[in-house]
Image (cartoon, rainbow, N blue to C red; front, side):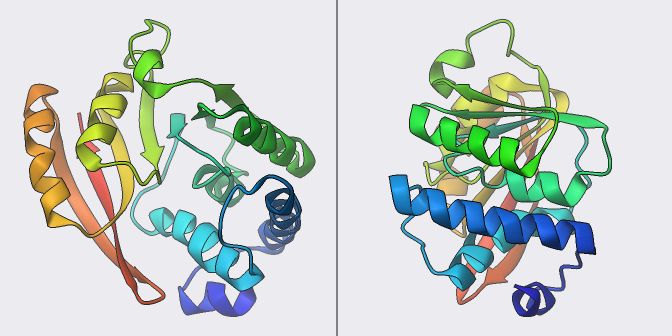
Length: 210
């Protein structure tokens, strides 16, 4: 793990390293039971899930109310939470429509002793219409593989005015172009796009400001 962290210029303290090592152990164990991810080798999990999740920390400092949309195995939020754990100035909701995935997240949260995280079984297309969630979140994150315009439709009703929706995506200009109509409809803009390389894949972080 240390070698890969160094490769991507990510610096963790001893406490963070120990939690990541424990999370790796827990994730591999749970993934073997219920297939959270097709990635099963230790180094691949570290690079393609842990490090990919942490790349956001190079471009923004998270705080306040945060939602992880379609969290499936706890990514990106559990790695981000471990990174920011000592801040104590934010809370996090994890959502996925698959109960076994949310139960896995609850298992990780309990065993890693993470605080202020609520794991919710729910469908984003329904929750965006509920008053208790509308415009609640300062930051909404997603590593979902869903089409970018679809993500915008689900995410933006949940984001506060002046808040951010941040999507981890592969670099696909067509998706960005298709999202322009939704952005205009929701009175949101792409503030910036940050590029990074993960292994041999070009990845991007899309920062949408409402």
